[in-house]
Length: 252
Image (cartoon, rainbow, N blue to C red):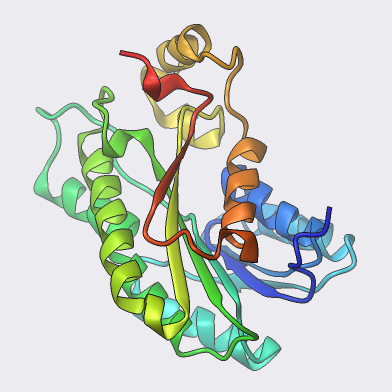
């Protein structure tokens, strides 16, 4: 399948594992050079870089905390000096505190909001400043917690809702400048991130039981939709949040 992505350059934040890693490897499969961003777990990030290089494309390792605007600027500066530009950014890095509302503090809320939503602003601004070969595409990874109530997800869910709102507003403003922005909202995926949920097994069982497609979502399922949104075939999709959940969210 030719998606006309070969030769493009991409940055995937938080891409040493899970959904981010699946997205990075999928981009490489279609001939895209991929910069791998990580904050912790250098060994996993280096393994991902080696896998990408083994696919015959360029890979670049860039450490940095996307919640820090100075780090974001440094990440994009490194990519610019190394590759001279960028066509694709996938904002995947996320964090947050999984606690009941009674246990949450304003500090917890601020942290989730900053890294999951506010970080999109300096990422977008830095991306705008780089040269590109044609239209630029930015995809942010969200979750169903933005629109549905999930136990212990108050702070993270609110931050994901803010992220999706930012995607709409940024898309409307920046489409005339050649930047296409969308989001992909993922259902329950059994990744390392889910290990931090105190109710992990309940979430997985509910997803297995309720998903019309008959199976759990995988990181690759999410990556497939992200890849599509990065192609010219999605050129008239702007400011949208595409839900990938096997039909879970359509049930009452």
